[in-house]
Image (tube, rainbow, N blue to C red; front, side):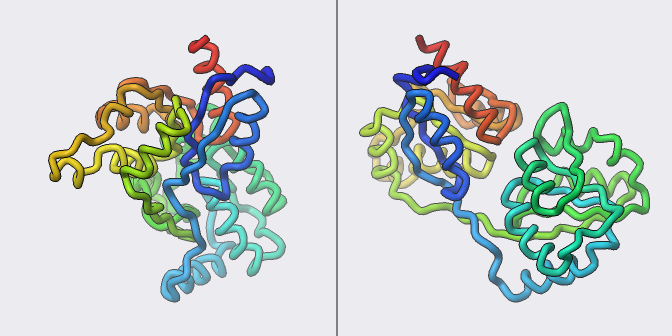
Length: 272
């Protein structure tokens, strides 16, 4: 990407603060500007019962046939607990990751080979892996945050597997006043919005369509949804965005920084 290929673009980055640096630097190196307003806060779990549940499952790690890491956060927070109890990662476990950045992080954290889908970075792509087709009587762990999509577990259980969640972190919405948030977008001259999950999309939409403003008879900021481009990590989230009322929606085909930078480059070229 050229040093001025994103010139004239101001990008709202909404990913958690601990995941912004690579994308922000890439945008700025290409001549773009960034407004950072994280929508989701990521933190390790702290509830005693949840911590004990994670510890109990990690201590039985060698009983799993496969571990699926759904994000870099899953590797970061789940990996800390795993490495505390298993300095030498157990042999014979298929380690599976969503996307290349998560795969790289898992390989570095555990010193093992990591399987990743070549077709995309979604749960649907993971479920197409050959290693997850004949899983009857196999035990599979999904390392993730608290809550989230159930498709992986439901499908694998339907195929006959025993599936556990190893929930290693929490996701909580960042609190902003809707009017202040929207004014920040306008003041910065943001022309591209980004979200990295359906959860962050929902949070963004809630800030733009403030029910309190509507109840008071004041105008909300729905025009932002029609005027600004929105970059999403998958076709599923793109479809949700269009159903919510966004009209200029683009699919980056991945939530990792490299996918977003490539998609931003295409958007920048189209706006020239």
